[in-house]
Image (cartoon, rainbow, N blue to C red):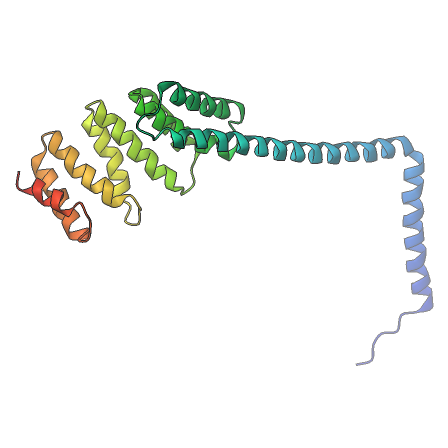
Amino acid sequence: MAKKKIRRKELLKKDDEFISLSNRFFQYVSAHAKQVQYLIVSLMIIIAIVIGISLYFKHLNKKALAAYNLAYKNSVSDFSPDIKEDTINRSIEELDKLIKKYGWTKMATLAIPQLAYLKFGQGKYDEAISLYQTYLKKDKSGSIYRSMAHFGIAAAYEAKSEYQSAISNLKKIVDDENNFLKEEAMFSLGRIYAVSGQREMSKEIFKDFINQFKESPLIPLAKANLTK
């Protein structure tokens, strides 16, 4: 089938329509020159603000990282057995300042469980629990720190003799098949069941522990708990 031939008259008509549309556009721009100018300037200002905010947040993230590194370095040194109380307090102050000043950054979020750990070491169990819970609310990712936070909460509740709360937090770790802390959490769960007087539950947990973690260095202790 032969292609339909476009007439010269039709081509000229299309060209005229394009020229007419272009003319109307330029006429509109000429008639509203100020409005168009304001629009362009506004867009440029918005772009400049977006770039400025982006650079500012990048700068703040760098400062937060530097503050985190300093606080982390000091908190790591706090593991020394002969560390002085004022050194621990200094680490707590640095972590607290980082969290308050750069609260929206990832570094500040990661500082929360570290601060909780130091509070736990001072025997301030309620503060430690509150900080760990704050971290769990802020970080919804699959971070390994979530498991560590649950473990920390369990330890704080155990120190307060609130065993049922400790058990519920340990279960959150144990129920996760691929959790890297499952071995330690299951052993602790069996131990806390025993401490709280739930001997049968304790024995069940230790039996499961022995079956699941045959190479664990904690096996002799688990077996010893079965004979009590």
